[in-house]
Length: 148
Image: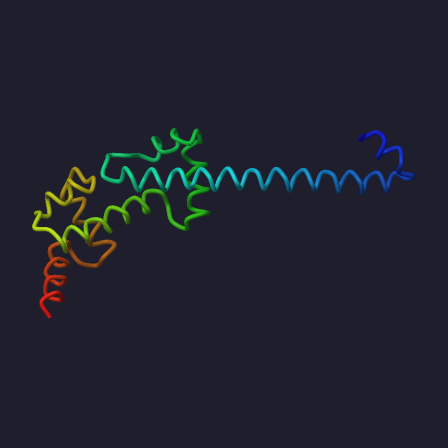
């Protein structure tokens, strides 16, 4: 079939134009397939993090899950989600911790352990970095707002 198409062309320029057209189509197809795979991999990663955020997970483990190089996975994750894998994991944990701070009587240490932090000080540091206040201050403010 390719030979028949080339044989129909009368000049080198027309063969060149046809070849560019074919290569453009191939490149477009490969790009679409790659994007589909990347989107699928990102969905797998997001689901995994949302199910296992309480566990001690790493970018290397997540990359292994989708059979990708950790650096490549990190790059496509940030391109698709807008933040790094570690930042997404941290935000997921902090979201859950705010729910626990508001709706439970667990200590800060217990909450830290429940959301995947082995070190309560790390939890407090990340909470303050992202929320601007400590978990204890958040709990007090939230309880004050609920009493109004």
